[in-house]
Image (cartoon, rainbow over all chains, first blue to last red):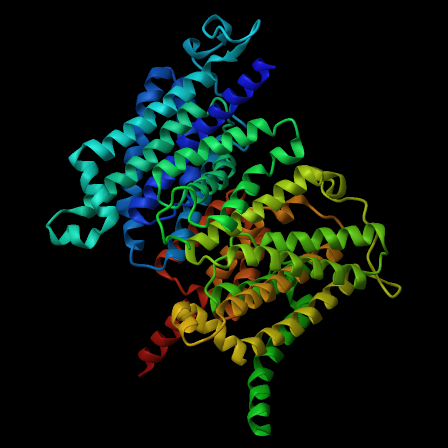
Length: 298
Length: 324
């Protein structure tokens, strides 16, 4: 009994960890720049493909992939913000959605062209394969309890990323400027701070987190051209449930969703729609989301 | 009063007449531009969908990413009616459209309180919820991934609904619905929709019950989606699960924006262009047609927010300017 509850809990946390990684960047970009990036899922997809290519290349390997993919995605995000998104700050919000949606299609179709429509195998590295015998460490478990090692590593990576981002925003000057920019960017400009440059970096940072999600999450999800859109919708829901623009809210919502999915898994008819049901309940009874600021969306 | 009214009608005669003439003669010229029979019917169905979508996006200013929900709901109910009740299309279409209307009231109630990006995200989410329900929770009724198969040939009072019969049925429906859309747009109600687009808050302060108008606008656009979904099943008696998916929602967004929203004419043009591109031009381009279309779409959003219609008026202006 305790074993199955513990395993469901662990699975929920692990699912939540993936959702955190994917939606954190989305929430960050939305919170600072007010841009809804429909291409965010596509960024995750690009990162997963890069992960496959680099980890299996002769010159590459897993260590290389872990380091390179987030950096490449950072550069990609920088290019995307400077080359495309910045022209859309003054345009209607729907135009931002449309152009990022178009970009998502282009990226998706380009990858389909290059790699085909099928799922690419993405093997975990040797040091991350196999299972972990949890009963050796946790005495309250009865008998033999094992869990895939990679999923535990993924959870740890996710938590470290969250901690890192919070530290960056809370304890550095850069973070201070960005947080101030979220409050009142006009005032900051008046003070002579180059906020657009910071915002470009924030955008790239958000995309880079999607890169981390892609390379670490790729082995447990799938690597096919449809994967970006598959994860885009739940990560939007995470942001809605957590509260638009709230990073702690996104983290909380991710774990709630993960746990809800894992504990409802015995009823498949429910498990598939539980995320939406939670979102509907939140919308009806707390429209600003769990940790959204007062007045937003109310 | 009478003369004003007839002036209104006169304003509609020319565009609706031209629209009717183009559609009705389609079987005679369509194959000369590379089309084939069957594709014309599909284009007309999508035109109906796009007209309704433009009322919501172009006139009311709400970008829905979940309109497949209404197209799909209607398609499934139409299919279920044909399968279990009767092969007569009239009750099937009626039930299909009514189901879309009910769905629009529910989703509209939940999503319309938000505007802009929130509305887009939420409609996308609800659309995907229905999609995943069709695939899993409701698969005993919907056939899950395989879709609803084994439908009988749809009939209309002893007339088999195949080939030309379906084509002329959809054309007649399209002409009527285009006319209705024009009347809606030029009515006081249409003015309210435009006012919602330009400034919802100010409209609210003038004492207008904005929520009711928004819901009506939303439901009207869902009726068009529902009619299109039902006709799609009459055209091809098979309900694919993709009819509920975001791909379909995305498609109607793309065609509307390509053509030029807020013009009625633009989205119709976009629908025709997109289907022509997907089925005829794709033969030359190959499998990358969607990549090319995505790029065209992006370029349109960036440089030509008014779509083909804006391009047309720009060219016209230039020619006029040149001749002076």
